[in-house]
Image 1: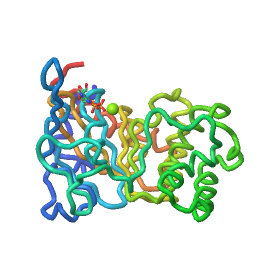
Image 2 (image 1 turned 90 degrees about the vertical axis):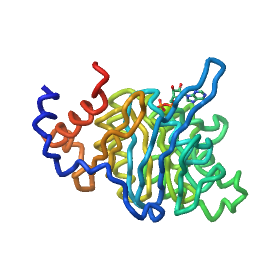
Image 3 (image 1 turned 180 degrees about the horizontal axis):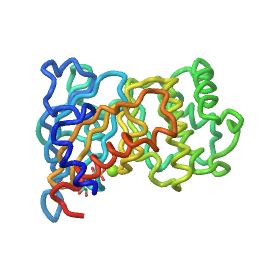
Image 4 (image 1 turned 180 degrees about the vertical axis):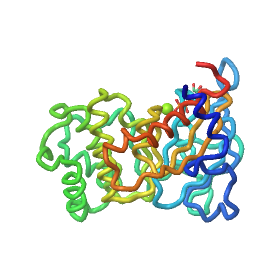
Amino acid sequence: MARDMTASMTDSPSWLQPRSIARERDRSYVSVQATRKTYSTRSGDVQAVEQADFDVDEGDFVTLVGPSGCGKSTLMSMIGGLETPSAGRILVNGAPVTAPRRDFGYVFQDATLLPWKSVLDNVLFPIRTQKRPVASYMAEAERLLQLTGLWAFRDKRPAELSGGMRQRVAICRGLINDPQLLMMDEPFSALDAITRDDMNIALAQLWDEVRKTAIFITHSIREAVFLSDRVLVMNARPSRIVADIRVPFPRPRRAEMQETPLFNEICGFIRDKIHEGHGR
Ligand SMILES: Nc1ncnc2c1ncn2[C@@H]1O[C@H](COP(=O)(O)OP(=O)(O)O)[C@@H](O)[C@H]1O
Ligand SMILES: [Mg+2]
């Protein structure tokens, strides 16, 4: 049924953006240009990213959605300067990424909090490691913990928190030094479905307040559409970006939008794109 729907959409829907690349790419905040990544392993070369070409504008919440193993984390590592592209180049603010970007925030599937430190100290941890004055970040820590409903838990240890709360702490920690870009790699994938729904709503609300450039990775199509301004759809091997969607829903995002025909139409389209040529 979903397939028939795609067939009837050959005259492109307005939310599907052409895969043409902007002319003045060096002006985008992040520009991933003809980027490939091959890992050499003992059992031969692994093509982790076949070819990636996209730009991210400042202030956009952009999600990469695709099946496991299609190269999403590798792409994120290259943008953050933790891995070097095998071909192509990546620019941030017009300059090539040559070293790990400490001015970005990172959130991973595992919250990786320090178990012996309080919530507040975990949020402030990057400030301490960067030897910045902790006192001048106290107000920001409080603001972030208030926005995520964690201020009352500031003195708790991570073991006293639920999984969803731990991920919220990790997001606050990722935001504490006012990063130019927040990268989130499947931050909610280890949570149960109900907590995950709640986290999506919490993150959407937080975004209305902090409004930062974000690159978010997930293999949940609904999560991608709910959270993002833009969704880049990746295909499994050869891993490529096969669709670029400008999500037409206004902010603030409301849970109810997930029940609308348009939301489901976009999700169905993405699902078909991911599976195109790969069977199911
Ligand atoms: N350090 C590495 N060495 C060798 N192969 C890797 C390495 N990192 C990732 N890969 C391989 O590259 C492919 C893409 O991985 P990854 O970027 O983690 O995908 P995703 O995040 O989309 O699940 C996978 O086949 C994975 O096994
Ligand atoms: Mg990954």
